Length: 491
Image (tube, rainbow, N blue to C red; front, side, top):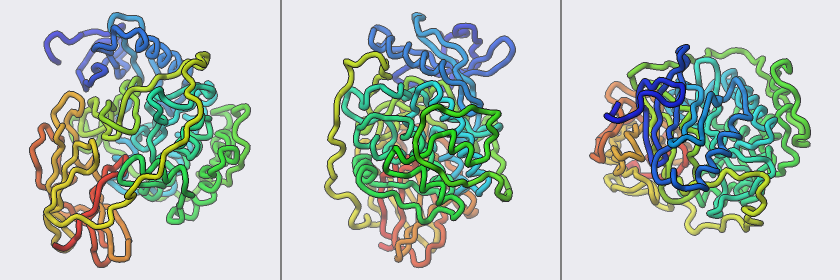
């Protein structure tokens, strides 16, 4: 703890400081009975902004409406304090994206249990008349007692405004529904689409839509049919329902929960949902060696995830912003490289902020990288990204990379871990693509062993590439947003 930092916040004793950013600080706290909580303490110029305080009160009211065993629930808050704060349940464990980066796709039983848990969390959100709008792997924590959905900071009332005041749709492009990508009003059906995209990712490790820039992804989401032919056979009928481009044809959450065999004693049907139907992908499938999620105290094999960081942090499409994500052994406020300005959590009774219809994203020029970069070529992975990468050499199935983050060690970016943020893949001459995982790492690999970057200095790392036949390219991309590029495997 730094000098002058609080020893108590509200009724909680502060145990340690876990992160900070432009919005404030995050602390690990405890109640008198020993319950651990994650506390977000707001600081900075926004304290004198009446509009910010009004928005913060709305967030707290929205979060207080939602209770679920699969959500990091609100514990307490004081939005009117001199330094406003809120506390949520503390959740330890890796995000879904981190788990897949380390160990590859989940087996069938784990996929279905994951989907059931997230569906029940969304049911709780929808029952409160809210829509999450940003269901994605980074917002699902694999806790010891099941998955937890976080980041309620972007929830909105079902009848709220359709866009942010900056004209950008709310959410993460890879997991947006088509109508969300074009700026239409978000209904509960956008969360159903995202649940399908999440299930596909958990089972395959792939995203439904990818691109070198968020605008490319937005265009593809809004104009192309999703392709999930590579998903396991047990999942395809399920995805047929959830990934319908027509939101009216997607199933409601109660239909999804019934199809998964979740006992109705744990929930009650949502009134008036979607009108579609979902074919069952039931959870009574044979167990296939459920994986044990390891959480190390003070180690680097799992992340401590701060549920409190979910509130008050928004994402848009361009420019640096704020985000808190799991990584290394602690969590700090770190921007997604596609993050942007804060958006208002809209009061559903305030019609003055409705922005009207949006024309949606225009088709970008140059959607893909036509030619791979040469070995040894140093490239920034995306406009506004901190990540600078060079694939220096490829010998057999081992690649040598030089990696840096030019914002590492700053208050906003914290100390990022390369393997938590970046995915290295092998691309064969026939287009077969497979990504490297810690499970397949060789004894000389250092990519998955590299810890947090504390400054912008380069690190040289080695990684074993999966066997894709004759190797054509080495791809390095941002794990969550998909931008990046390819290097030729031969000089």
